Length: 318
Ligand code: SER
Image (cartoon, rainbow, N blue to C red; front, side, top):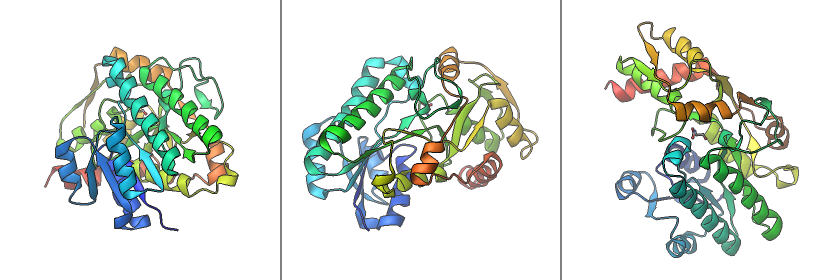
């Protein structure tokens, strides 16, 4: 069945690739992008219908909803983990404000809301190897506090008001399109840019720090797979553990060096990022997502590295 999808915060790492993914599934006219930054809006408008919107402005947001009457809102507005620590008050204001507006409008205009949660929702007293779906969640970053609060608020809107809220806990997402900004897992993207440009890379994360990761095509599949899932099979909603691979900087470096033998990497560990990475899972158990809606990632570290290098060569060396 066709659906109309409104992607809010559409100019970021996930949004820019979710747009063509959703257009392919539901048709070009059924996808609307909303984005705050005018220059980014202009760029996006080459490919999709765009509304320049500050998602914290409830009135303006409501008029976009009334105009398009979407079936699903993808609320991708987010200040990520490392940036959040520089200004926690703004991170809370932006992350929670956009979510609350999305949920309220979904309640009023009867649509679903997909909001990404994150590995950042976990903290240092969470079991970090095979992190269970349902476990201790006491994060010590403002980003994580927002993610846990967002999960609870989204489940509340489902049980209290019947809003169809669904979410996944994304790991670090690796892609060759738009760069991520201000995350702890960004190193796993930046390293590829350095390798392709023939530069050496200075890694801010300790060589042996494991985190869950995922290649963008699997992340997009998770977005569409979960909104298409049969609701009667969902025992969980906000939010599902999902992962595709887990590695540390040293392992990723080795994988790249097998393909780019001259590539050099050194370390200058950022203590803020180190503390965040240490508090996150090494790898999550995503059995519930597999059982309840058929989550089944296809990209591993080698296939991802081949594809990243191939695409970045085209993008950067033209
Ligand atoms: N990629 C995010 C970050 O590092 C995690 O969800 O902040």
